[in-house]
Image (cartoon, rainbow, N blue to C red):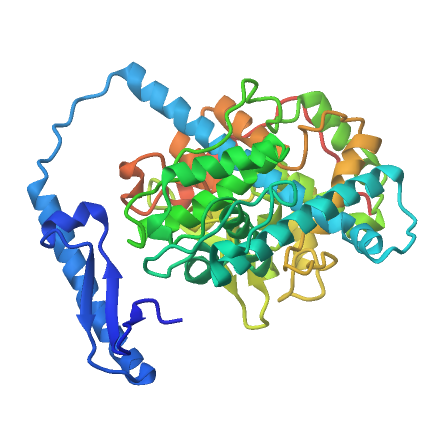
Length: 514
């Protein structure tokens, strides 16, 4: 699809690019940049689009500069200590909520993957050996999936045939979807394609965001992204709740919708970020919040058969059953970040200390890259790329010895982890770990999951009085203000010193039983 190429009724092709509303006063009040290409052959016209696009972007950039020059710089008012502390707490809460949302997405996707065979059997009318609870869950998911497909089909029909393609509300919750005029940049089309290509989104991520875009259009009106309003997003939220969607599911869908609309706004494809801040607020916001492990729960995990007896359950994927929880506790890293480690990502690095003397230590390189074998590592965002010092306790317990003893020194640190259809290495392992800590370790609170190690790490770094900026860098959190974007972050010596201060008082862990 050629986004800015439009054919007039007389067959002549035009270049057309929408101008964001805030820039229009600086481009003569125009709503769009429009030029006749003087051609009726589509391929010849397409060849002119790249140069026209560059010229248009140059015009928009000049308008941005003119806008900046015309806008008086705000007078900086010094913040009080109370304001700074309040903002710090608010930022920290936002980070935790983001982590919770990511964890909810992971849990929901994992549950769907687990129940897919049951759903397939139900759809085909085949008997399957499954628990009544799983059959009931699979039935609900199947109904929801059929409703989603029906909504998307209706939207497609209405986009093609107009308002005549209607169904009653009793047949579907979808509303009429008359196509609107505009740039032709739809959320489930080129916006999705460009966003996923730019961000390196895996197939599953692209599929889930496409599904939400289709849900959105099936319940509102099929519009290009620049014509979507805040009222449309609010109507989508209300429609989901009216259909009986749970609050967590509604917020997951809104989060994905916000991602696409926010990207379009950031890339000048929409005049405003109309979905910003829209979610379902609940009175007991902490009810489903992931919680850190208590000391007693940590003791139960690390005194369980995997650690006390050397058990290696098949579903625990060999040594991953032993090392992944330890790495979670002593790095604060996300499960997939450590599960995807390759042996070369465990690095011995030299660095100068504060006196200029050279020191050396082990680090985990958490990065997004594909090696010469085609082994791909992915991370959540740019801030997630980092070097994490290996905690002395991990070295004492034998992690380096384990890594150096692996037969394949160019392969994965945990070779028994097998990627699922979307390339996630730890999906099946996570399905084992949850029941293990419930049934074997006696941790029944469902808010305690593997991600709780990340919250636990955060708590103990605070207790160790590690600087907040160092905490963020160790955990791969984005900075909280503009100042955090300056410089290259904390040096390796500062990070290693901070990690050496990290303690979990009262926790004793025995070395691996061999």
